Image (cartoon, rainbow, N blue to C red):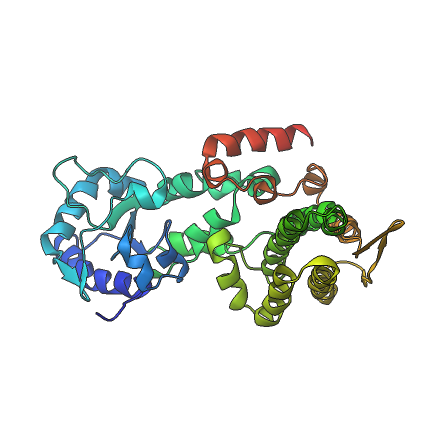
Length: 364
């Protein structure tokens, strides 16, 4: 069977649903989009993706008033016209809570609804489930820093296929990328994380720990992938798709070649290969023009024969370019939630995010 990507399946699904809604609710104004978790939202799905939690999906976004009064009837109308298959793919496939990360909130009735991928939601409900906010008005600097970039992609990456009022499109436009001052602060955090690691590859190697040196080199490469995507004003996805996302950016293939060399090398060759990656990131930073030119050159780490570029200089340059007092008041050398934790459940937990927001605000 020919693989049909999720973006196209969503469009096919709307082709089925739209006429039924027009007939049953001729005055209903709604948006239709592919929003939520999954490789199909990001446009990275392949035939391998089809073995679980995948299939035709569509989010119908109603006003809060229409959702209160019509959600059940809209789902009735949808289910009345849903076929068993769309483009050769089974329509019934996954419960809505698996793609929003919380309990199903689209007025399904247990034991009655089919397990199809059409969900009826409100915009505040989507913001709450995916980003832990109820409206854009909550997006102060601490809140921006507490939302993982993957979650922002889950809200903004998939196609909007219809938007009668424009609320979904306008909200996604506002979330398309970080505000400039937040962007500088987040890049500063990644540079600082690199600064904390860059001398350790050589130290571990000198101590006879080639495995440890490789782990550190890989950690620097991972930080560099986040940084490279941010430099191109692109939200970094979670680990599985970092390389895929970077490969699709301008110059990404060349940078990935350097990163691959850093991961494959051993001994002092690995240290030099890591520096090559950092020099490429440093040059990209200088091309952005968001700070004075840093012009990194490798040198030894104090009296130790480990080559470094002193990555904290980029942190300082970026921090110096931040003029917003609220952003300047954020904790130094920490970065966003993405630099704090590698734990997907922790980073996706809204309770943890609320605690982090309070902590960030208390430091101001």
